[in-house]
Image (tube, rainbow, N blue to C red):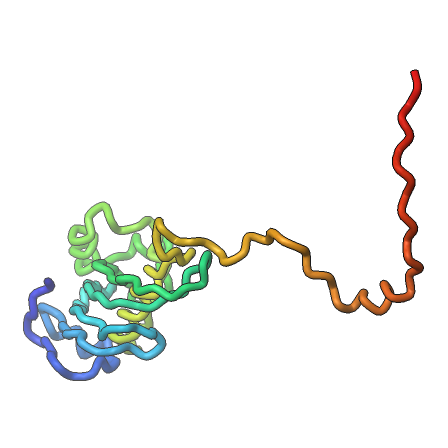
Amino acid sequence: MIPGPEGSTSGEALRPVPIQELRPLAEGRSWTVDQHLSGLSSLTPVIGRVRAVHRGSVLELEGEADTIVTLCCDRCLQQYNHPLGFRTREVLWLGEPASAGGQAGLDNEGEAVLALAGDKLPEDLGEGIDPAGSFDPGHWTFEQLSLRLPLVNRCGADCPGPASWGHGAPAGDPRWSALAALRPPQAEAPPDEPQHP
């Protein structure tokens, strides 16, 4: 679990906080998550922690959360429960999305971030956040969980599959039934005569 330093909040709703309020907090701010998130239909409340630290030109985010969601299997169409969770660390550029030229201008605070991120810092910090804006820990948690939803929903290895694999008489298109009634009945074709050598 992420430690709860100064600026920790527990039990309060996950509300957006202005990014400038995070600047004076040396250890950043932490939130305890124990609630259902809007936009995510989960069977259980989302349980976890989120921490945001202002590092000058970047916002360092760290979090973990778990919940259980009910999904519909794409193969058999039965509902099943799926554990959903994340443990991640993310660095967001404060300002316009960074480019290679923009990163060259990192000040002393930025150099500390480069050391902090190590080799995990990408060449191009493509995601930026407005430094005069706010950080919403609830929405960030929602985004992280949404990114971990499976692309293909399968209830498991013992999935029975579809109720019908398409065997049996094909269903005719009812729009052709009127035309089929106008067609004269077909006489039986004579059996093939054997060929003589």
